[in-house]
Image (cartoon, rainbow over all chains, first blue to last red; front, side):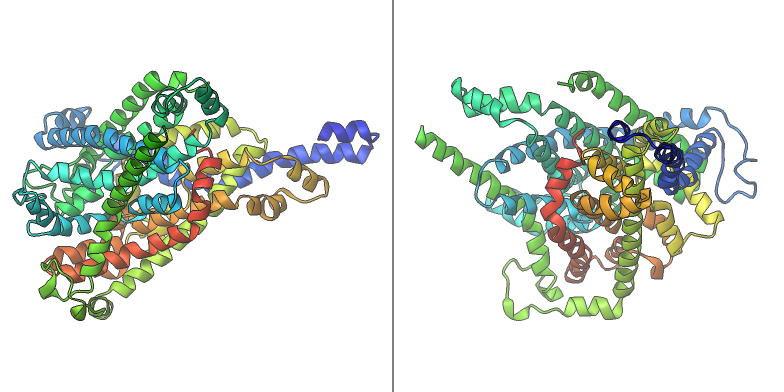
Length: 315
Length: 273
């Protein structure tokens, strides 16, 4: 645009001046536009991140008389202790199982629903909206609702009794509590991933399907050989988001177990344990070490996925 | 051929309706139960004569639910407005304005998005308590006024709108801020409503931070309040579920109002990379 101005009209002195001034102003304006974010990120993110890293090598309680900068250094012992702490290891196991169960199932359901809802089907807006409603609902509300539906003399066990199944103590049984929370998590986030899949599906050119149809491909072949490969970037994105999200599970486990991670640590998750050590036991150095272990896990998982999926996302 | 096509259509509808029942069933059953008297909660039939809104009135009058609703609305609105304004500004600058350090800043944002929020929980809490912001509206809002994800979303969106409009406005002598507020933001309506849904519902539903920062009953937001109410009155499912409805219906309504642009918004903001 600026070039056009210069070639069409003889470059008057004032115009060149304005352009220069505009350029200079751009530099200042750019920073003015990002300033609120930069301040907020520096104060509430970068600063605390550095402090958390420092704390993870210290023994510090919020209740201590000394400030955190004077708290004693303990080297790596917070990190070493975590891997010898049976509750933390249990939390790590639970969180991994939770993630391993929830991620593939919820992405599969979301993809199937997205493929169907993307077809020219009557009432598709209704279905899209209906599937998204659990996603906009508070996890606390969802947890309480499920506690009611899944209670021993609740409606789910009543329905199961029609199929001659015994009543289960869903949230009270150490073997069932975690799977029940997993069901809840799948239920409440399928909608989100469906919408993202739907957005990805809009980008696949119709011409590819038309060409496939001329070549006599069946619907299932279309899905397997066109939709899924072309949807790979979206699948990768969802995989990363879902994995990161599941590793941070907290609300459901907190509400269901009344903050204890019970029965018998069967619903103890990494973030719930982080909360407990940091804000119930006030071992803030130890809690910070746990936080960085969580960060490391998420970081490594993302890198691994990028290795498998990421390279091919450009097409 | 025709027959096979019909059969698959029937199967599709079965899946769609079946999953819709799974999605909406728990809400419906909880909704009905919230109108029942306590004696009826384990009755699987619905006796319409016994249904009444008395649980809602009870929660409103005898418990601080009205206060919690106010807190939740106040906090969620402030945080949402802050996010819409600041994320859009930052996203716009990253997409359109040439300023030194832009690339580094964008890379830093992508990097920070990898850090789980819980990592900064302990120091941020210490900071807020040093500032005296724990158990205040300041503490519940000011740290949450911008979002990395929101900025990313807006940046992706702003790279898709044509530059020509802004350039002609600039030649007409409009300032950057003028262009941004008068021309760019009105064009960004789909992205803004997507952001509105994500930020409002996200903050309305947020539990971990408010449960740390709101320590006395009158500062609770609804999720924190409902959790504490459930902890004390879990036998009274009719009342607890009325609380669940008070918490969940507003965010569902917000979604229903703004959903028209939602999927379009997700598609144009390039959320899918």
